[in-house]
Image (tube, rainbow, N blue to C red; front, side, top):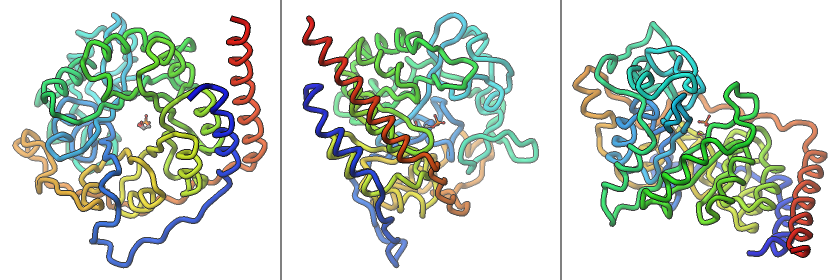
Length: 365
Ligand code: G3P
């Protein structure tokens, strides 16, 4: 689609995102209720069942039957791409400090299973909870280890990798250029043999714009914070392929999904974990769901998974069984900011401005 041909789609997206009904749950909650086409994306490898962003969790996600391995990447002090969510190693490992201040060798000394507790959504360090895989050799992986692993699954394998460039406005480690991680990640993707099965995601639009500049054939996914609607207009104008909203936002409705599809964008929200939240989100017509509990979504789609959801090594280390779904109460829908329509207008104007500037630039060539 050319840039100018996107404009009608943009207008459609902006106009259709005003609201929509939430479909009620069916009476029989045990029956498959979601289409099996919804991509089951294992958030950080499925951190309800294994320590987040480790090769243990990614192998476990494949064993369970997830479709997609979701992860986060950052650069070490000596320029290696590693898989870790936070800007520091404090929450998930036995070490402390900023990942960008550690060499790869130092990061690899950290125990990445240190704070993991089975059945927690994502790791929240709590000294009163069990930590059964401490000292079992789980470490922060390099990004290439994940690509090597998936490539090694063979040419018939269909798993996808969704990898987030962790530039986030407000983060201490924000790279305002949006280029540093992409300059290492894009060559890795291109040499992996998995480019067609890799998605680069970010909350920071300049990082995705730069990925597209480096290689327009790489699929990109815009993560959104707060109300999603304004970001849809931006994703359309800037040529991102997928929009990934916070599933708890009240404007993430069936109408929002319809508008995104009309604009040619897939919708893969994060991070519903309960049976109720996965169902409610799935019934909106989304293309995938990013969840810490991939077996829960598999069940809702009528697909199978192994009875044992924990890696064998964790069971050996004494970890007890975990349920497929997170059992906490449903989160209330996040309140939509009062500035919804002004924000829409600003975003629409921004998007139009981008498109017009590009058209002028092309015309002047
Ligand atoms: O990639 C979707 C989801 O992971 C975004 O949230 O905080 O895990 O990066 P976060």
